[in-house]
Image (cartoon, rainbow, N blue to C red):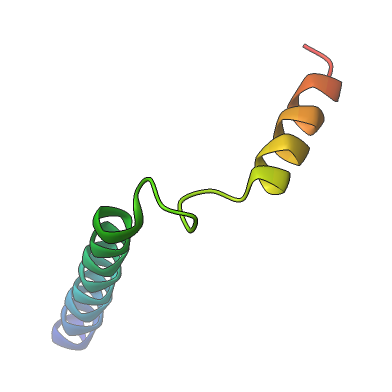
Amino acid sequence: MERIEANERLSAEQREAALNAEIDAFIAEYAGTEFDLDAELEAAGIEWLLSQEP
């Protein structure tokens, strides 16, 4: 049973690493472009943060 759990853990780690690599590639390709940040979403996030009590 330990071998199965180890394989599942390794598989999950590999999937996470692959996803992180894809995200890093997207960031590198689109940084500073129109896809970099949604201005409305950023404004909404700032508004929400400012509305929170300290």
